[in-house]
Amino acid sequence: MDKLLIQGGPRLNGDIKISGAKNAALPILCAGLLTSDTLQLSNVPHLQDVATMLKLLRQMGLGIEQDGENVTLNGAGVDKLEAPYDMVKTMRASILVLGPLLARFGEARVSLPGGCAIGSRPVDQHIKGLQAMGAEITIEAGYIHAKAKKLKGARIVTDMITVTGTENLLMAATLAEGETILDNAAREPEVTDLANLLVAMGANITGIGTDRLVIHGVERLHGASHKVIADRIETATFLCAVAATGGDVTLTNTRSDILDVALDKLREVGVILTSGPDWIRAQMSARPKAVSFRTTEYPGFPTDMQAQFMAVNCIAEGSSRVTETIFENRFMHVQEMNRLGAHISIDGHNAIINGVDKLVGAPVMATDLRASASLVIAAMAAQGETLIDRIYHLDRGYDRMEVKLSAVGANIQRIK
Image 1 (spheres, rainbow, N blue to C red):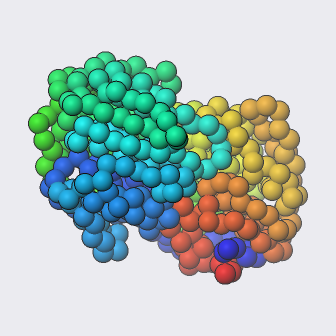
Image 2 (tube, helix red, strand yellow; image 1 turned 90 degrees about the vertical axis):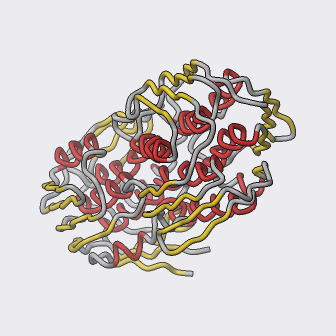
């Protein structure tokens, strides 16, 4: 099992190219099931989750060609309408095949999903929405069985804001008969990116970027070309790394307009930020200042950045409070950070961080995807050597993080 060995101390200087967004690429790949034509996708990241999704789709009969960050999909040969447990257990996003299969083929059999152990994240909103569109759904032996001769448009109000739920129902509605209204829809940039692809494929969608999506079903969707949006979480993660270590780094192939809240918090921390249409420069020369925040749905502070900002707060001047409102188990990195000398206490959904002058390297263990990234940041800011175990979590969502950080001066290496 791979580990990361990090020697703390070096400041970061140079350029880092940001990859395409994992959370946009996964639903966009599933959209290949909606048409028998060809989709040409670019800026697709090299990630374990993407590889798992491509393996699942290939098993279903989707034609797939890969050339670096370019992926070509052809749905003419899809003949297996099932996502088996052994493919789904490691990645919750596999549930995203349910809507497209049901809409185009009238049937789907999808295992209940797995993924990171950060919370329950139920799929009942997906099921509720598809049932409102006329699907007959049963759950037995760990599988969702769904059937519908033809999905019908409906008004769907989800009980909570759900990103994958919105994406699944949005894809299903593109081929449904009549008008579908999705109220309380997720507004994340990755949802918008999927919607823009679907429009390029011939879907009729209005309200893109808002919490009310209106979809008029069409007979069929056709092929299209699309560039996957930049990964805002990878972008903000590297900005946090600069905040913690100091330095001068320019991130390319990214966007600042989908990172407003995180960038505002980084300015509070003390990072000097400048940006253009596809780049962000971060300069940091002082000790970070502590910042408090509360995670919430977009456009609020992203739960996927909670752990990385906490790493910065650990060595910041002052005390801070972090409130997690999205996932109930998303403080598992705290005990590992405390092993590095951080002073963090947990009170329910709140973490109270008292900044310390220095962290000291130690062996630690990654518990989930974003926790892994936070430990990398903490280790780079610590004195001495840190060994991070279980970094397969990291590879699910970051494209060769250690290579990108080494290129700007970090002392970090992967150990087999």
